[in-house]
Image (cartoon, rainbow, N blue to C red; front, side, top):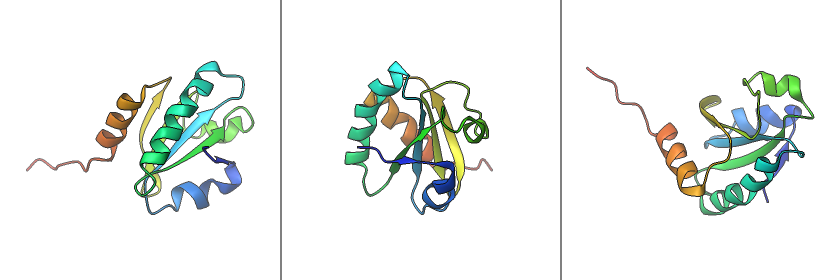
Length: 112
C-alpha cells in the first residue's frame, strides 16, 4: 500500500528526505490512477532502500498540486535532494517506470 500525504506533510516527507521520493499526484475518480497503484506498489516493495513513494490527492488540494504544474492525473513527480528532478503523466508499465526513474536519478555528466 502506498501511503498518502497532504500538503502539510509534504516538506517533512518529500523535500526533507535523504533518499529520492516519487509522488503520485492522483484523484480517486481517475481510472488510470487506480490502474497505476499496483505498479507503484510493486516498485515500492522492490525499492524500499533506495526510493520512497507517496500518493497525493490532487483533487483534494488542487492549489498545492498546481505548484508542481499538475494539470492532469495521474502525474508522477520524482524528487531528489529536496527538489523535482523528473515528471511524467499518465499510466506507465513497471519496466518503463523503472527506466524513467533510473534515468532521472542518474547523475548528469558535465561536458568539458
